[in-house]
Amino acid sequence: MGRVGRGLSVCFGVVVVLVLTIRVPAFATPGGTATIAVSDRSTGATIRPALTGVVWHDTGAPLTTLAPLSVRTVRIDASLQAISPARGVVNVQPLLDRISAVRAVGGDPLVILSYMPKWLGSCTLPFADATFCKPAALDDWGALIRQVVNAVATAPSGNATRFEVWNEPDLLVSWMDTPWSWLDVAARTGREIMGVERALGRRLSFGGPASFIPDPFNIGTFLLRMYAEGVRVDFVSWHWYANYPFFGPDGNEFPTLAPVYPLLGHRNPFLSPMGYGVQINAVRALVAAKAALAGQPVPALYIDEWNLSAGGFDNRNGTNEAAAFAAATLIEMQNAGLDEAMMYRATDKEANPGDWGMTTMAGAKKPVWGALKFWQELAGEQLDVRGSDPVGGVWAIASRDAGRVTVLVANFAPALSFDRAARVELPASMAKARATIRTIGPMDPVGVPRSVDAQGGGVTFDAPKQSVTFVEFAA
Image (cartoon, rainbow, N blue to C red; front, side, top):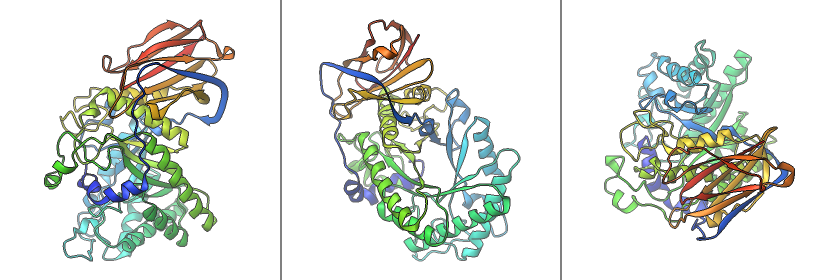
């Protein structure tokens, strides 16, 4: 989205997307009360705050506008093409400044090692841009990676230890050379990072391939090549925007897309957060099989770009609908066991209601900010629940700690969403006297808290269409 690559991704991947991902329509079931019965049985899992990471571009509002949201992992560009404008010239200070900004808000940077400096790029195809091609000499690329990684891993003002090779290399506009030459670049990058790790005597993290979709060919060949080269893969990453195969419906983002935007700039009435759970399980099976063949541990799984739409603005991003979608998606990610997720993106880059940030250029918080804040306020131990009905448009998750029981309920559907009542019931063993309820919905973009009596073993509340409700039971 922030780059042409994400904008053009649908053009090059519509057929692949439709084949790879099961699309389950979320048409809400009208009427009645959604009853969420919380069990005192633990699922054995803990709520993962690491699912609330973000992607950040420093040309927009500062990260500090997200406070008091804890930003967790923050994915940032190294922009190698900018910090090395000529042979022998490497200025890492702009990257160090971005890393320091991430550390200053308590975040952990994930650095994307891309793209190719113009002086180094050498393209196989005559029309290609050297910024997205293989290096003329892998040794020069290796030396650049070694210098940059060493600098950011040892920076006294705030360092980074996690690195991702390239961004969306399975997309023509992000990699304009042969697939095998990208694997050469990835393998050399991984070897250089492992070399810096040995030299420093401290653990660094390496992963990829940051595919623009959960592409089994790209992910599979990446893993096979890394393992063949003796490169340790700590995480496998990919991207997914739920409105695929369409662009954002509320205005073209890039002039180059103007010819196709009228055809592809639409809402997908069949999008569903359920697609995230399906693909996480599919990628896990693929990754586990490749790792087993190589006798390697299974890497962590990251979806390090996700949101409603790519390639075009989407006015839902500034509404309660985005908050409901985000909450339902986080529940899918949690239940499927995803290790980390990074929403695209942290802050707006321009004053457009369809921009993707959780805060505006002026620093105002959008409803989706509140959904991620609700997630971070969930208690730690995940509990079994009954009554969550994603096909019917209702997602629910519950958790507890020593003094609280917390429940998150999302009422979301892209096409036919309905107002409904919801009731959360606790077992007698976890009964509490009071509950606080906060709902982000059409009439309340922030979730104003209200205290209610929970003496009857639970609470009943309105769950408007396209809403997310956080319920906290306490003594």
